[in-house]
Length: 67
Length: 150
Image 1 (cartoon, rainbow over the protein chains, first blue to last red):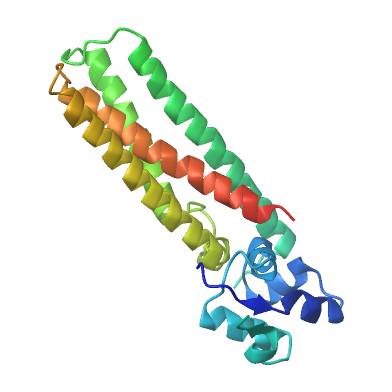
Image 2 (image 1 turned 45 degrees about the horizontal axis):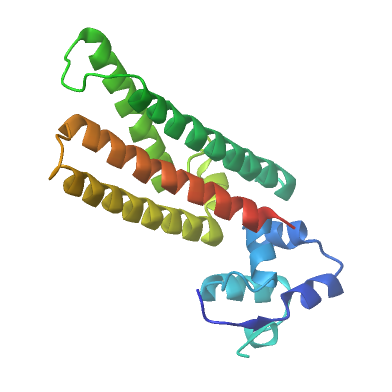
């Protein structure tokens, strides 16, 4: 998981007024997974990226991009 | 079907698992350090030695199964799936990798030491298992704590 990946997850989440726990509950993961993705510590799998995009009603490309 | 627990409940369960992992790692390693500090006849085959060995075996096996599966066995499958999400699985795999590496380094050390002194096989196995399982638990707990920090 060393490949860098820019993400706009925090912005997309706060835009909806959700906490990390809110988003975690919607995609059935722990809050720490949301936390580590937002901080760029953890690069999510394709499935999780798609789930995040669906929960936030956006596209994966809008959430994640290569630096 | 019972409803899934809230994020707060999941958070509580995973923090408890992290605390228990840390506590078990400390107890497991220091219990075995104690085992080596107190003069011990590794070749002895008394009933008390057998009981200690069986107790150690069960404890080590349970910790090994815990690190492989992620624990929380009494929770419903859906809850276990959330508690063992992608980051947790990654942390467990990293912990197991560290445990394997530490175990192999200690095994190499035992092999090297056996060239100069007698290393009882039971003691060697004990050291390798303690170091391997103990380090895996410590790494898992550390990674989980770091990830949980807001």
